[in-house]
Amino acid sequence: MVQVQGTRTIRTVPGIQLDAEGWGSKVRRSDPRTGDRMKNKDKSRKWMWWFLGVVLAMQLYFVRELFAAFALFALGFGAIAFVVAALYMLHQGWAVAVEKLAVSEHPAVLYTKHRVNLLEDFARRRAVATAAGAEELAKRAIRRAGSATAR
Image (cartoon, rainbow, N blue to C red):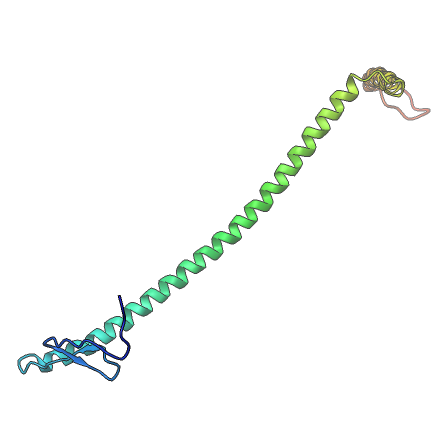
């Protein structure tokens, strides 16, 4: 197949006119019956398109604002979730460490356990003694030194 440069096939179609570049553009024919009405329609259409464009722009702005708000909320909730997850992981790590320490047979751990048990026993005995002392004080009559008892 061979292509010949510089030659064009021109076909004429009713209602199409060739412009300077050779491409067709539709010729507008005005009808005397609708000429004035079409001009009014075009002005109305222009305002209608402007109105629709403004409404669309406002909707796009509103959607962009919603996306921005969503992004801020997502970042905020993500930060809160990160803090909660970090605290949970710290708690779980602490629980595992305490469990391993509880079953440990290391001498320092055994000594510490023994001392903690002694301290708990001492505190329990002291609390019982304090409660008994408080009951005894409550039963005593409170007097000034050198005063006589009431008869």
